[in-house]
Amino acid sequence: MKFKFAALPLMLASAVASAEQYNSFTDVDYTSADFGTVDVDTLSFQSQYYFGALETLGPRKEFNYILPVSNIYGGFAYSDADGSSSDALTIGGEYYTGQWKVFGELQDDDFSTDYSVGAGFLFTPNLLAEVEAVKPEDEDTVLLFRGQYNHQLTGNDYIGFTAEVDDDFDYRSVSSKYFTALSGGQYLTAGLSLTDTDNSDVFWGGDIEFYFNENTSIGAGYAEDESYYFDATHFFNRNVAAKVAYGSNRDFDDLDVFSLGVTVQL
Figure (cartoon, rainbow, N blue to C red):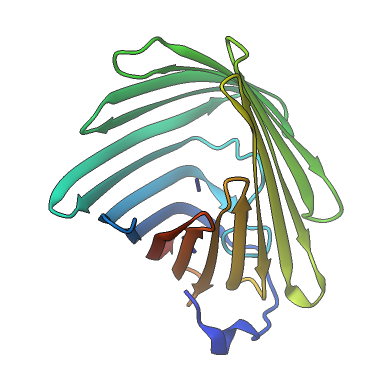
């Protein structure tokens, strides 16, 4: 679930967090990217429906690291680059039966149509293994092997890990996410990712998000290529949130990416 609105007067308002349950998540986002010589405007819509309720960990947009719940999702994006337009469509789903999982996805845009299918096995509620076949158009099929592990700490706190490698072992990645409840109804998440390929050095990226309460958060991220972003999210009630983000790159001062969006959770 798989850009985040500043409501500064409300950010310091504390709230006693209680678990909420949601089945559907819908996002509408507008992004304006200025590359110096080219401006790209993108309007996107994406929605995901879970056939079982997901329970929050306190903040309204934080859930368990592994979510073994059948779901379907789809999205559409339309981009305009100085009069030249393009669009992209994504549909997919995951189905769990017992400890087994099957999933698939279709991505179609003006340049290619890509498919992926896969299966997984949930050894425990905290350990998931998957194999996925990805078929880009006019390219060979790539097999990806993936593992996810969630280490539960006290309460809802956790640290989760994901590792992924392709069948030729020329692509390798690991990532981790830490979630913890602080005092006074506040929360913190931190993430780190490392990607290594045979054609490049190890690439790293990290992010952090601080929740003033269950409704309002601010975050930031930085990567090895000196790209960075800042974002904020605010829920006006249990169902509707607004979000804003800005990103750029220290090596490319002309790059400015702004995003505004709305999230609806039901």
